[in-house]
Image 1 (cartoon, rainbow, N blue to C red):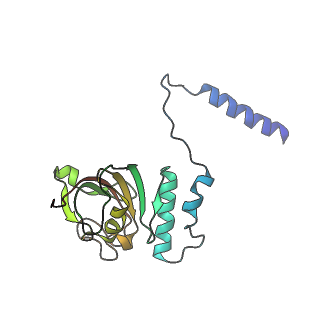
Image 2: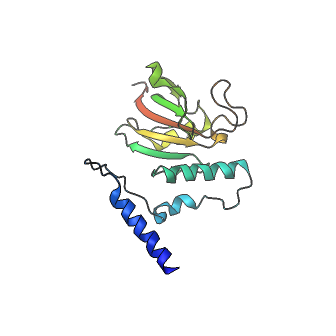
Image 3: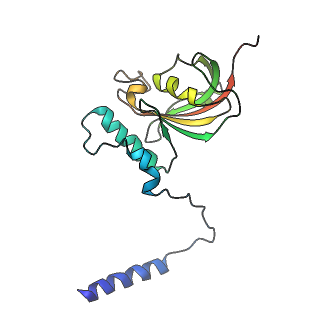
Length: 183
């Protein structure tokens, strides 16, 4: 038995020595340790029974698998900040302008204001529940990704032609401007 273990170890060492090495060193993302995800995994269900629980687990696995740093809102929307804006904090009812890209966990895109080369203008509170909840966590000039469980997106109905029922959605958001009227 011992000679098989020795043989296996020798083969592993030999194969690693024979692998072709690139001259270019690829930058590596810092790998988060399990302890870094402690706050995230407090929402993980060991035996998910409902769709909401299953989606929560899928989102947490996605965040951990992508090595993202995310915060969770009370209703389960996750926000990944890429750039903190220096403008005013966003408030409910504020008219704002954003560029966005909507996609699924598998990366497949379903909508993009970038592709239309036209950001959208709206009032906070008039969009899907996940946007309405997450936007007040940001400032003008922020870039973030929102990860929405289906009940905070288009829910059981979906959005015909774009999003099926009960889909987890991701939105890359670029908060461009506040359209507040000056007095």
